[in-house]
Image (tube, rainbow, N blue to C red; front, side):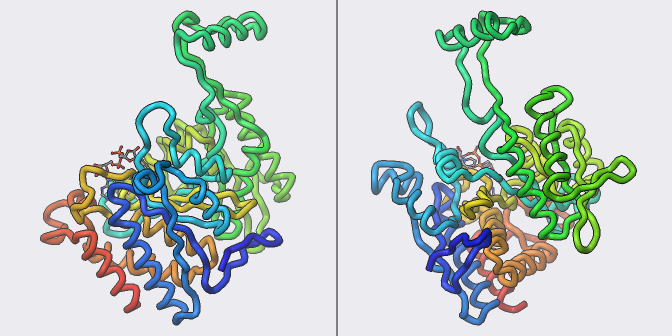
Length: 408
Ligand code: NAD
C-alpha cells in the first residue's frame, strides 16, 4: 500500500510500498543486502505486523540493457506513486546528451534538501583526536546556486554576448580577462533558501537538537550567500518566534531553546576539525554543502559509511541513497562496505516513523564496529596492533549484522 502525505504528515500503512533501484557496480552487492537487513529489523521490531513491499525500478546500466534508456519514465512514475525510494550508486554517463540520473531525479521530484547525518561509531578509524564529538546533520540546498548549470564556455558566441551585456548594460568592468573568460551564474532565491532552512529548523526541533548553524560565504557574495543568511534569520524570527539574548538568537522549544547561529564556510571547515562539538544541525547552500559533507564524513569513516537522502519535505517525496559511487575497482569482490546504503535505509525508517527498527540496526552496527568487526576499507585504516587479524567480507559482515539485530 502507498505511503501518502496527508494534512502535512506522512501516512504510512503497515505494509508500505517502497521503490528500490539496485544501482551499478557495487550496487548489485549492497542494495540486496540493505533490503535483507531492513526486512530482518522490521520483522524483529514489529513481530511481523509491519513490512515493506519492495518495488523494483530500473535505472542505470540495467535500465539501458532492458529499455534503452538510463532513467525510464516508469521509474520516475513509480517513485512519484510510492513517494519514497532508496537507490544504490549509479554510473554517471560519459558524453554529451546523456542525462545524469541523480540530477534528473532531484529536478523532477524537486528534492530540495540533501540531508547527510554524520555520526561517529566507536571503533571507526578517524584522523581526529576526539571523533566522538562529531554529531552533525547537514542540510544542503539541492536545486540552486552555481550548481543550477547556468554557464557558458570560454570562446563561444554565447559567452561573448553575456560579457558584452554585462559590460554595456550592467556596467560591469571588473572581469579580469574578458576575452578568455567562461561565465557561470549563481541563482540563490529567498523561497529556495527559506524552504531549506525551514527543513533544518524543523528537524532540529523534532530531534531535540541544540543549534542550527547557517554556513555561508556572505562576507564576499553579499546578495546570494549573504541573502541566504539574512533570510534564514528573518525566517527564524517570523515563523519560529526567535528572540535575541546577549547578541545571540534563540528559538523557544518546549524543553528549552535552539540557538540559530552562522559561520563563514572557510572558518567552518577549520572549526569542524578543531571544535566539532560546536555544531549540530547545519544548513548551507549547494556548493558549500558539497565540500562540507565530504569533509565531515571523512572525519568519521568516509564514504563507505556515510548515508544520505534527497527530500522534498512539502510533498514528502524522498530518495535515500548510498553516497559513494559505483566503486568499479572493487565491484564483485565481496569487499565493499554496505553501511552507506544500510544507514541510508536507517534514515528512511526514521523518516517514515519506524524508529524501533531503525534503532535496532543502529545498535547492532555500534556493537559490531566497537568489537572490531569491520569491512576491508575500515580495517585497513585501523593500526595493525589494534585491529582483528582479518576483515569481514561484505556478505559475512551483513550476515553477522542480521544475527546481531535479531539477538538484541
Ligand atoms: P567511488 O565512490 O565509486 O569510488 C572512490 C573510491 O572509494 C574507490 O577506491 C572505491 O573502491 C572506494 N569506495 C567507494 N565506496 C566504497 C564502499 N562502500 N566500500 C569500500 N570502498 C568504497 O567514486 P568514483 O570512482 O569517482 O566513481 C565511480 C562511478 O560512480 C562514476 O561513474 C561516478 O560518476 C559514479 N558516482 C555515482 C554516485 C551516485 O550515484 N550517487 C556518486 C559518486 C560517483
